[in-house]
Image (cartoon, rainbow, N blue to C red; front, side, top):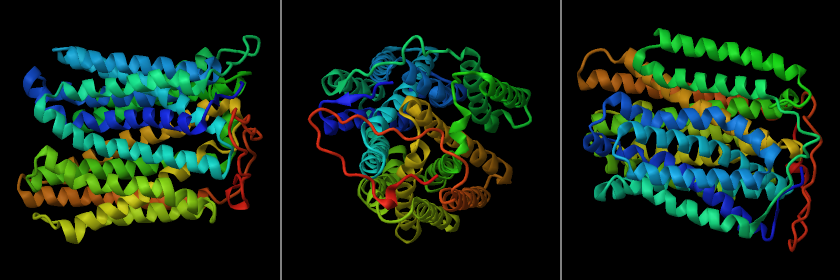
Length: 491
């Protein structure tokens, strides 16, 4: 595929980061508004859960397919179309007065995001040279995601105070700006020729179905039980479909997900790290939110402000510190140190009590956690797409992003199950013991991530999926600085 070429790479990066900002913003924007939505529309708890889960399931389940579609049909085309769909779904969500229609709008937004994210990331990775300049671009991309999520927490409380429908209307304005700016900043790329296309329909259907069922099973397990027929059926079907997918991909001449992508020990480890990183971080956040509201008695907006230091400390680390470190030390050190910081921040919450110890435990813990996130997120993203041929950057981006989304579902499911299993009795002491056990579980997951990051990102084993292809030099841009030894691909 011909590479995406921008008239100005800085403007290109700004537009793509705005889309990532929107995805992250929307993830946290709805959370604080849920009680208000429930009261006005008279929704049950099960319906309310699917306002969040409907987005998560479709977003995580379709990322691989979205990445492959971007590779086949043109990244700018897919990016632009999915942004239009995202804007329309947001607008509809703010207008409807039915819980079912609101869920449908969230499901459609998840579908749109599943195509937007890998298309945007693959435009970045095919525009910026592998090495220091791509590290900087992906650092900026990661910082934008953290900033969007943090701003979403604040805006959700402010907008909900006025009217919860503003939570759905606000993303429309951002999406329209991105839609208008895209044709002005990114020239169209050429999709693969029709002669070269070989549609792997079976592979696409089986991997999409497998991931959808897996995330669905993980999301509903804490509510209906891990032994429930629906949970076991979903997880079992996911395993069967995944086995069929592997068999199909081994035989297909142009597979949806080329299995040779995983011959690189570094890329495989990056995907595992993404699962563990997200499970620890988002699992911790799930438990911390419950602890702050149910035991400390804080309201939704106060809770958002209490958790804000995690989001505030992440962007400057991801934007400035991590690219600087990656130019000077091997990436496994950066990932290992980041997971150590994240785990240390989580461990501090194990010692929380029935009264707030914000300055002594919570604030330092959240700052450590945020610093760790800023170190790990860009590093694992860079490791997940390095050395991949430009024609497969979309699916490679889908793999690393999909791994992260899988970790989100896994982390929340595990933490919810741990709390349910360990809370014995109805007193505050019993609840606190359950939360402390859940925090300890999240810290163990972070420790596993530390081991995977430090060991997996340094061992050179296997062969790369494809030889890296240097992107075409965008018109009007300066020559890129060649990668240094410290930023050369580590396979």
